[in-house]
Amino acid sequence: MLTGALLILAPLFLGFAIRLENRQLMTLIHHSVEALIYLILGLLGLGLGQMDGLSQQLAGMAFQVSALVIGLLVFNLLGLWLLHRYQPMVIEEPSESVSHGYRRLFLAGLKPLLAVVAGVVAGYWLLPKLPMTEDLATALLMLLLLLIGLQLRNAGLSLRRLFLNRHGVSIALVLAASSLVGGLALVPVLDTGWSQSLALASGFGWYSLSGIVIGDALGPAWGGVAFLNDVIREIIALAIIPLLIGRRPGVAIGYGGATAMDFTLPVIRSSGGLECVPVAIASGFVLSFLSPILMAVFLSLSA
Image (cartoon, rainbow, N blue to C red):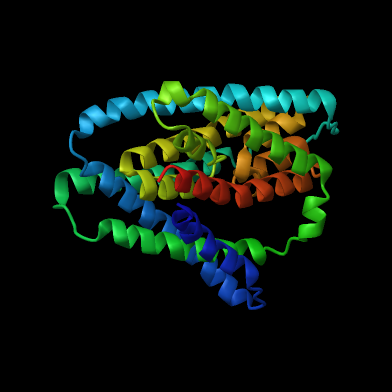
């Protein structure tokens, strides 16, 4: 049962163990990760497009995505609100406008969706069923996780300082715990096993990984559910961060999940100020590290 987990975790930990000093190589790795993400998301869409009974599957996916998004939203906000009550984080009101760059962020968020849509169109209308597609996706996933491990290890962040950031670590752990509680509560709604539901709840907004990992293990339909759940989390986070961060900074940072250290960080910075940045990076890093581990473990238990 643990073979699947080790298959996912081995390249991630291998990459995390390697320290690189060459900046040009790190730039190449960064661009390679981006290209691999879009390629694998395209393969995910291809698998969706070539599913038997696609129209019926889409109806079921819409319900499952809605249940996940709403259920996790409720449990996450409740957990983060309780954390703020017992461990409040107070910030000064920033003067910087939050509107700058919003259009760019939303447009960037559409790119992975377009990659999946392109794959669906190609699979449904243009291409015959291709052999070895799943094997290719698995091989590319292993390479992607290796490169992500290298990125995390060589991001120039002090792990000691990250894990000593009390607010950041607390926010990450509460977000993870509330997501898992929500995943268990959603088992009868999703009509799936508890381990599969927990795996779906463990994406923490990292849509470019969750859709790929879940799709590789459970098939393209569940991969699509995981992807849409996490990409919608990111869109909601972009909307609520400016509204909540002044009074409930931990709630705003936490709901962004793993994206708090990259995609939603500019909005956190501009709407919450500089003091929110180390908290967001610490929270996002911990969740980015936990997400593939938890997904791998839960998926191995469902095998």
